Length: 301
Length: 208
Image (cartoon, rainbow over all chains, first blue to last red; front, side):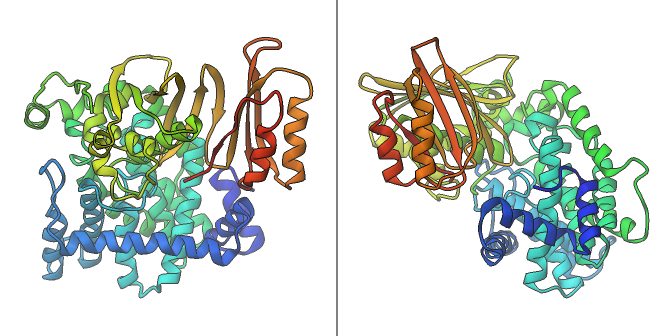
């Protein structure tokens, strides 16, 4: 890969007069030895999986394995279709679609990890809502996935994309940054605006902890995906308007990494603290596993 | 992938597959020790299910993943889970020991996020293997010329080495080569390496 951080990525894109997604496609071709067509086709196949997971959650009665979640995507979607929402139809639909994918994930359905399964709703939420509002083709949305992938690559290699490693900021935060950058390029913004959007959006989730109730990827993960999609759109809009992150996006990523390292283990995907350690969180855990001490006893299969 | 967590499910399934590939034969019993976040959330995240799915060689999108524990049981395989703490380990760490008769093999794997993994130990040898490229794991006897013989075979098959590690327990004793290549090694190349006198066996691990 010819870039290690977002600044180098933008520099390459500007020097060669190409969008970031084109740089990412070329790097992937070089790295895998596959043809450009094959690389794009592979991403298009992932896009199809993504679209199916969005649709499933909006049309089927999704219920998670624990029975704790499901149905909210449909609720929000139907509400948005009635036309009177506070955020506006497009952003509310993005929420519905983000919730949808995350609900499918919690029900052990097929999803694309973008960058992780816990944060798999944000990019599909943003992309599918832009498809309608900007009138984009499937090919363009697939390119948007490469923009997102470039940002995800940088975050994963300079920080962390794991909740156990860096808290929710590393998952929902990374996904939000990826989606924000993709939204900017899809809306015709410059590479520089795209990474500014990523930096602006990521700044807003710094410090977000990973505190899954009963150790499930459900509460609060699904709702946070819904919020992440709106945050990504807001970041993209601010960047397209010319707002810049005073702290450069690459430094925001490093800050995220350092915050993650100093986060107590209770708040890094151990179900020991935060929402997992509330009376209701513990009661849910007890109902599901029959224990209430936070540890999930080892058993034999 | 089939979830619900890329690090706790897809990554775990991948570590399971690597363990199965390293073992190189059907296993009878699996002892699995979970550390950190894996230990605390493995039931909610389906890590146990995913590890066993990997040990059964299911891909990360295989619809049988949710039923893997049951499938293993039906096949008469013994799987035992244990949790432990080790503050030096990454929060998503698992140790897997596979046994079949007198043959056993052990690895320490870490799921670093998004389904990506690192293998840090193979049968007591410290390694750093990502399993994102085709990889050959070659236990051999520490002796001059073995590394050269192996790389010559790879070169003859036009395989480019991207990462290579060699370590040994002591001079002239058990040693391990871990070689990642850009392309998958064909059976003839693996066979030729296996035929080398100082080589004990070759495990071929291909990305899933």
